[in-house]
Length: 131
Image (cartoon, rainbow, N blue to C red; front, top):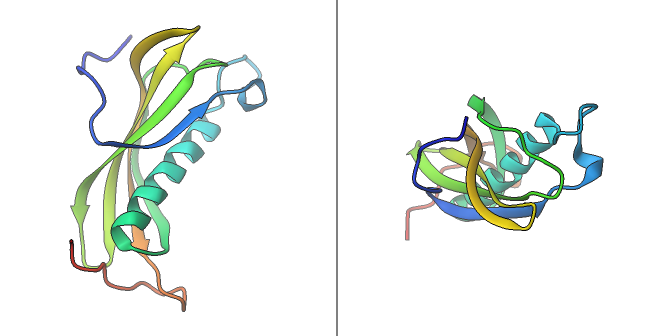
């Protein structure tokens, strides 16, 4: 059942075409592959805010709404849910923008991921002030 939300919220940080190698035994895109794309998107978003390295420390919530199919053009959109002293919690929405050569907007997955800013010593560090 498709989501009724008007469209994606946040900024696009990952855009990828799904391939046959990314499927589960039933021919749909493997959930673990989708989760990894979302984590890559969220990590990029968090690193931009932290102005440096971050580490994923939690996935609080993950909801799969619709299957993702081979050949779909998938976009991950990120927005800040919350910031702490060293951490940033990011809402990530995954949307199919093109399916079977037709433009569409299908929200397929969403989740809440938390990242911590990490210094050269691999220990947490404070987030820099917002610009």
